[in-house]
Image (spheres, rainbow, N blue to C red):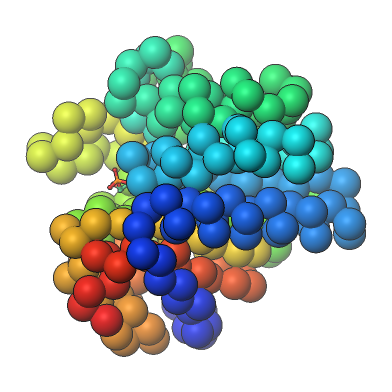
Length: 251
Ligand code: 6PG
């Protein structure tokens, strides 16, 4: 594992102020990056926590970012149709992408029309390898920013505790089976290799149900465990945690 970098921890009173701050940080990061290079690549998180962030990016920030030069990917996707409430694409499209002037060719969803999740993961891998040849750090893609959430069990993206996907060193995207507790078990996820070759990572975490796992991760920043996949996230540059007060209760 790479040397642990000291994560930046930002705590907010509620999901609204957390999402406002996250939207401002995303917008600033895009602007700064586009001063130095042509395009900005961002992988979106799934789940419910980022919904308000996406809505703010699609409304308050719709005219404040040069979306024409932003490319959107997903950190993970459930293998369901785009109109399924479980679809991560659906949330981002409804709240954010349908509202900003981003060319359709800049939006890179997982191909959920593939014959199965394994095939979809292979196609996503090909898509990433086609997009990132110019930006590779070592042999992996290098997203400018990856947005991640955190499950109570310590999963992030669809990297679940003790999953074989955690030791995947060559693939950038793999198919996984989420634990039975999850409604949609067939998923495609970026591997740690792909996430950790990114420049920056923002974790967005809210709610007291996450307080114990947040404490386990952030009280020992250098420690990591396959039992808590989120603890293994080590981007190349900046790791920032956006927490609401409830999620930070254990700190
Ligand atoms: C997914 C997400 C997953 C999510 C966490 C937290 O597709 O489910 O990528 O990693 O971020 O499960 O989900 P909530 O934000 O809904 O609590």
